[in-house]
Every structure is written in C-alpha cells, then in structure tokens.
Amino acid sequence: MRSQNGCTSDVIVDQDRRMSRQQKSQKLQQFVDYKRNMKFKLVDRQFVANNYSMRKTLGTGAFGTVKLCMHRKTQMPCAIKFIKKESLRVHEVYQQLNKNELEVLEETQHPHITRIFELLEDERNYYIVAELMSGGNLLEKIQEQRQFNESKAANVVAQVLHALNYMHGMNIMHRDLKPENILCEKSSDVAETEIHVKLTDFGFATKYDPNGRQHTLSLGSPLYMAPELCKEIAYDNKVDVWSTGVITYILLAGRPPFYDKNSRQTKEGIYQDIINSTPDYKVLDHVSAEATDFIKSALNKDPAMRPSIQELIESPWITKYSQGESLDQERELDLSHNLAAFAKTSIFQSGVCPIMANLMTEAEDLGELRTLFTKWDLNHDGYITMDELEQNMQEVCNLFNLDEPDVRKMM
Image (cartoon, helix red, strand yellow):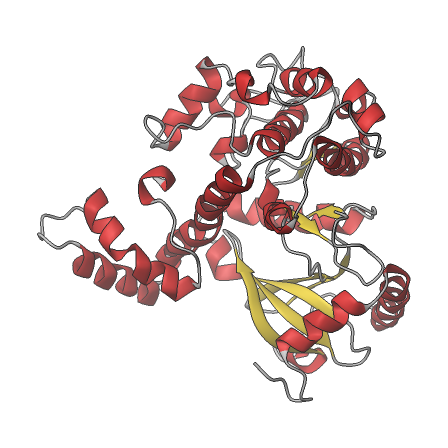
C-alpha cells in the first residue's frame, strides 16, 4: 500500500525499526510538543484524515481496528485505534469500558506501557493515537528467537511486573493480561536477542478502590481469568497477579496451565478447569525451583493468599534471574512446537472471534453473516457442525489473513 507522499507501509515500519531508542524518543517528543500546541479533543470528521495518512490495518479486536499511520506534520509513525461509537452502543457496558480505557490511558506513562499521544473523537468514532510497536507481540517475538531460556523469561516477566506495579500504584487494574497484549520494541540499538516489552490494550482496565467496594463484572480472556472472575464473584487487582502466573507458565512450558484439547472445548469447560483443577507442574521439571514457586504463588486460587505485584517483583526468581544471571546448567527452552500451535489458536481467538461477534452490530454485516451461515450449513439443518466449520475455516483465514488454526482446539 502506497500513501500520497510515496512511502509504503513496509518502508514506514522499516524506518521505525532502524531508529535507535534515543532517536525515537526525540521524535516522540517533537510529536508530543506539536500535539500539545494544538490542544484539541473534539474534532470534525476530516480532522484525522487531514492530519494522519492511513497505511494499513495492523490488527482488529473486540472494540476497534488498529491502523498504521503517519502524522503528516512531524512524519512520526504511529498506531491509531479506530473505535466505532455505534459498536459501543450495542451494550451499555461497552460504552463504560471504552470510557475506562480513555481515562486510564490519559493517566499512564511508563517505560513498559505503550505511550498514548492523544485521544480524539468525532461524531462517528473515537481515535486513540499511540506509539508504533513494530516488534510484534510477545509470542511472535519468542518464536523468532533462536535461543530462549529461563533467564530471558524472568526478564520479560519482570518488565510486565514493573508496568503492573505502576498501574496498581495508581489504583488501576488491567483485567485482560495475555501475550497478545504485550508488545515488543524493535530498534536499531536493540539486539535481535533482546526483548523489550510494553503493555497495551486497556479496553478492560479500570480504576479500583483498594479499601472500598470490589468489582464483580466478569470479563477477560478465559485462559487467563482468575477463579474469582470465572465464579463471577467480587475481585480486586489480584486478578492481574493470576494472569501473570498464567503467562509465566506459558513462557516456560509452551502451553497454558488450564487447557486440554480433549476435554476443555468450551469457555465453561475452561472455567471449571481453572476453578477445580491444578496445573501440571511436572512439565516445569526442567526449570528452577524458584520459577516453579513463583508460578505456584501467582496461581493461588485464594486471592487473599495470592501475593501482590510488588511481592512478585521481590521474589527470588525475579531478583536473581531477571538481571541476566545464568542458572546452573541452564538450557534453552524447547518451546517451538507447543508455542507455535498455541500462538496460532490464540491469534484466531483474539482476532477473528471478536470480528465475527462485532458483525452483529450492523444490519448489513448481519446479512453477510447470514450468507456465510447458509453457505456453510451444508446439510441445511440450521446448525454448523464441527466438520462443517473445519471444511470452511480456510475461507475465514484467507479473509482475515491468518494461519489456519486447529478448529477443535480453538472451540
């Protein structure tokens, strides 16, 4: 795709990757200074197009589409999340969650949280203008690594913990921590073997009162949800601790702790596994005792006994290994097969499923969905069987440019 000034999307991303972190910081400041002088929030429908050149779609989630853009005045590459107001009117909670995201993003500024430059809205859309993270998400980055060991895993988790500690210090919980919401930097002065991460996607983030009423709204991504969320009972910021434990388990084992392709084929099945089962810690025999203890403490089903983020930062595993200290007889983690299969399914669940769900928001999209359903319902019994879904999955993956997942594992 080529813009009016002749730059392709790939060229923009390549230019971003070639800049050093210092160069990026200087360019960011130039952009922020320009934006500050503009002093705007409410804009007309042409404002975004007049100030930003649109390149290509980077991703699609439950609340909007993220596009690669270039600020015309400063030539600063950025990522803009487009959120249709109409899609938020489907349910009152969506409007509140979007309001939460905007409020949270305005207050957060941390080395391990994606930086938000400005928040705009016109009569049709909300726009969240953020820094471009061209290194992909955490799972993609790890799959690119030729070597990935426990020390690197500890370093990544430490970065996530510091971001969460900052948020919790401001009485903000994320509530949707998962590898897809952890993005990686890519700069000329950062080696390919290094992993620098930042948290993103605060669509489910919210403020909380540490001494007041707890939250009860159950939301998040099933594989990473704490037992109290699955039970739909009161909870606090300890749900972020649980999700961190799940992510750490995945980094060290190459698969989620509460997932079984043979029996956990529904969201309710995953919930029951989280509530009633214990993770298989035998798959962690190859890592240090400190790592296993870290995960066990984070995955304590009793939130009152679950450590705080600060306590996890001070844990032996993080303090000893996150700074690069090698373990005795440390070996590379062989995660390639499991992690690749898991990532493929995860991409589909976090990408296509929200898209299909959001098709319900407009009549014309609903018509498309009816057409697909009729086409896929081969025996015309009013149901789409697993076999019919498997036969037609390639059509969906081609439509959204995704690798074809294991349908039965996904469902």
